[in-house]
Length: 123
Image: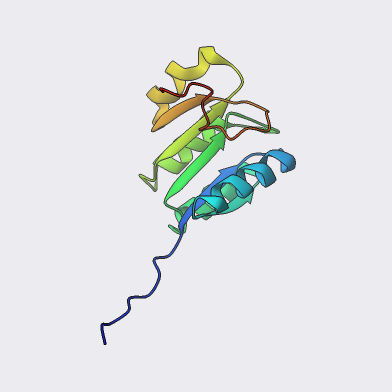
């Protein structure tokens, strides 16, 4: 008989956003794709969680209550090079995000379709 390898561990994603409904929705979509989502609504705790090194990707909202997402990103960059995807409802912040050390920037959307879905069949 051939040897069986253990199933690969799911990629762990940390979503830093105070919107609980969005976190639940993103968690559902990511779970279908084989990812594991942890959500954190507090920026300071998020920095501590990233520093622990348990996540392979961070999705960070720019507008959190009491703390700026850019400040959180700067704090993350002092201890980690984990990829960070920034979410914002404001398109004019993209340049600021990439210069602050974000791996990517995506305007936020609040819709029932997954963020990676496309209405274009040839896209």
